[in-house]
Length: 326
Image 1 (cartoon, rainbow, N blue to C red):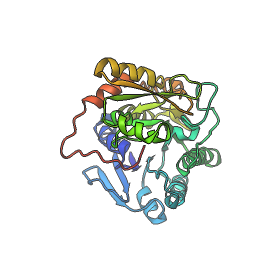
Image 2: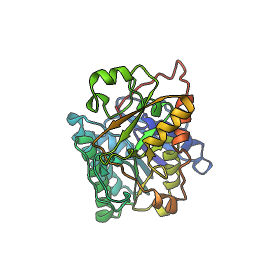
Image 3: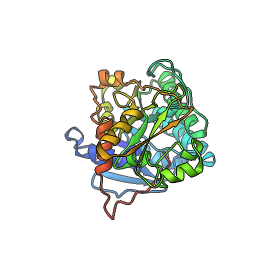
Image 4: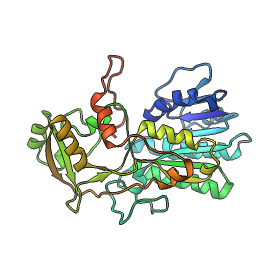
């Protein structure tokens, strides 16, 4: 096995690579990491190719002799980069894949922005057959296009593609910062869009936990997955015949209920609950198909995610660096 990984320096890539290298069934596998702005260190079984996904020669060089592709590289809300990196890069990878004499599987990490996560309403749990409804912005649009491109290469050329659609991915102390009202907040929503700037600033001093309400007034329910569970799903899908030409939702068994989170933090940390009305929608990303077909089970529930985030202690060589806002 020779696997090409894009996005190796990202949150999922940094967690996946050591887990992959340590798995006994992949002990003889080689890794090619296509890196651009950030690099990893090459190793005994890890080759680093420097270049942009938008460069045909760099992609062709990285794909030489590859048997598997794990495509995770992405751009967020960067209209100046989105066509070259997300669309052209995906096209170049797929073109090399379909013409390759060695390729066995192409895995894409997608996102629940392709189904609008909290911005679009669904009357029932979101399955792999639910319609794609991206929210506004170029990032969500690219996630839809990427899924469709893999799907069409499967139809047109018989590509053995697998798409793992993940919601908001948490690691380390991410969840703690996702709930913060302070300047250390990770991701969204922007609190000043939902309340006065003065109130947001007062809450930013700490000790408060948001209990967001959805458009119906019920507590908001949003989908998350811990990076360890996503890595486990990737390892389960790799070289798995049940993953051939399939799309899987990879999320917690249930969406995270902000009321349950608030009540847990009130009980365990004495944090004060702040109710916040929002225009958002509660959605449920149904992971039944992945659990049944891949034999995968998420291990981190919302309580586990809270405990991991609140107990995480950063070392001097582990600064909190946010490459993307969410």
